[in-house]
Image (cartoon, rainbow, N blue to C red):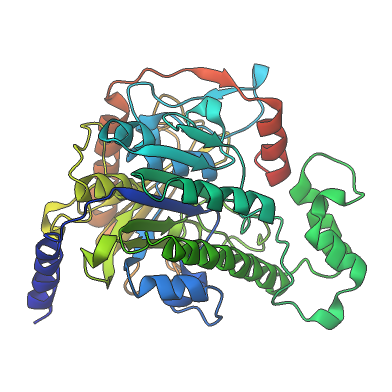
Length: 464
C-alpha cells in the first residue's frame, strides 16, 4: 500500500506539470542559519513562522533537506551552482592567510543567474555575499545588501519587484537576520529587559566593548546581562526567525498585490543550521560550521510552483541544496549543464541518486565529510586535509555511523559495532568515489583578495 501511494504521488507530480506556465518569474530566498526543526510547518512547538506555514499550503516542502556544506559560503555556492564544494571550489575555511586571499568559484561553472539569463530572464540579487568569490556573477542588478536588515532596504526590494512584475526574472534574496548575534527579544520575558538591554539588542554595533568581532562583543554583553545560556539564546534565535518570517509575509503580500503570486516560483531554503548544546558538550552560541549532526545541516526546503503546476505536498525523501538548481531549470525546460551534480526533484524518486554528501567545514586544520544513504549516516574526520577535495584518508581521527531511523538524536555511534561494520566500509568507499569524481572535473579556479567591507563583515559574524 505504501509503495502504491508513493508511486501515485510521483506520477501525480509528473502529470500535473502539464499546466502551461507563460512567465518565468522566480524568487529564491535563503535564510542564513535557519534550522529545519525550528519553523512552524515542520512541527516546532512555537509559532515562529506563520507566513511560512501559510506558504507551505501552496508548496511542496521537504522534511529531510540537507545542506552540502555547513557554513555560509560553500553552502550557498552549492545552492547556486548545483555542485558540491569540491567541484565549485569554495571549499576552504575562511581563515586569515597570507595576503588575505581565498578561493573563488571554479570558472568552468555557471551559477543560476548566468544559466537563466540567455533564456530572457532579468537577474536581480539582494545579498551580502562577496562578489569577488563569484556570488555576483550573472546578475544584471547586484545589490550587496540584506533586504530584511532595515525597512529602507526592504522598500528597495519591493520597488525592484514592482519594476519587474511584467518581466521574466530571477530574484535571489539572502538574509543574515537569524544568524548570530541574536537580536530579537520577541520570546524573552520583557520584565527582565531594561531599556539599555533592549537598545543594545536592537543596535549591537554600538556596544562599547572593543574588538572587531561583533559576535564576541555581543556574547560578552549577553553574559553581563545573564542571557548567555541555552534557553535564552534559543529564545533570541527563535525571535530572529519570527522577524524574518514577517518580512517574508510582507513580500508575499506584495506579490499578490502585483498579481504575480500565482505565476511565481518561490523557493525558501537555508544554508545551514545552528547548534544549541545538543552534542559536544556546551557550545550553543553562534555555533555552526563544525560538524554534521542534524542540527548543523538539516534545513527547510519549500518550493511553491507556479499555478500549483506541482501539487502541494510534503516530501519525506532525503534531498539536498544541490537539487534546487536542477529543479528550477527542469521545471522551465532549461537545459541542465553537465557539471550539475544534483537531481531535479521533478524526476521520479527511483531515477535520482540514493545518497547525499556534505563537506567543507570551517575548521582550518581539520576536515569532516558526511554521506547519508537511506537511514544510515556516516561522518569521517581527518586532520591536515589537502588537494581540491580537502581530504587526508591516511590521517583519519574519527569515524561515526548513525541509524537515523532508530537514533534520531545521533547518540549511539555504530561504527565499532560488528553488526554494522559493513555499512561503514561501504559508505566510506562510496564517499571516496564521489569526492574523487567531484574534484577531478574541469577546474579553473584561483584565489582573490577579499575587500575590506567583506573582511569586516566576516570578522563581525565570527568567521575570521
